[in-house]
Image 1 (cartoon, rainbow, N blue to C red):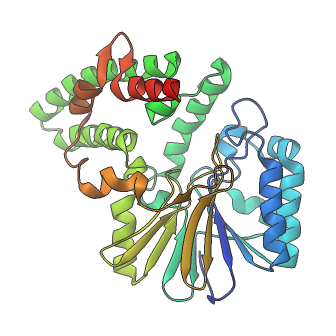
Image 2 (cartoon, rainbow, N blue to C red; image 1 turned 90 degrees about the vertical axis):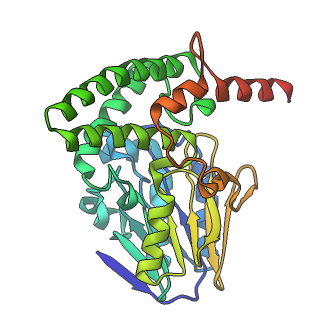
Length: 330
């Protein structure tokens, strides 16, 4: 479902809150009061709030009930704002069945929102070459991932240098060992004429390592292409949790970041201008996190090349060790 509203009113976009069950594996990490303050500001100016997907993490919490128990006041604040102003919820891959709750939560649910004729907002998983193709199938994998994190009390996430823990480093090492087996299997597949099946698994590993290396979910160029093809001057999406705001080939790409862990990014659209800022650090984002993507440095990067460059032995990885040294020097 696609919705279009006139441009003119100030629009605030947040995405990827990942409100979960309130347990230690709830990546929102209790920033309810901070978000409620933002909601109060939007209400005071009679602005529009766009929640750009993956706010209620049904894959982590399994059901709305534990989310309501953990984040009830925050969800009530959003519902109250929806009665006084406009709140749009654009479905993401973690909450694609959220329409069931739209009457209870009082917001308008859609898949895509146009501001005027040339600004388009959508979650962004539609540009993901794996999740976009089959949201339900990818959801099964994500549920298993969340279950492991909850059971063992660890974060198994990318980029590795931001989650440079022994369990995550071991998971990467184990992933490489698995990849060696998969690569051998792919040789056999190609020998017996199953090239498409081999290419798909190779594509997935390349997608994964490019996500790890600076283009999460490989969204950037597909989103820009969608903007050019649809006549949009700006494409606003989330999904990858990597905030940014820049123009490439005449199309503006805005990524709304996330509210997971120590992040609280907000996108502001007013009078045709865009700003992406973190409510905690006050940092304003432009293209700094996208230099590797836009320079083409990731072109042709595959898992084997990444491993040879990054792995130092004994569960040590180059970027992680450098990040650790920089943190120790501060």
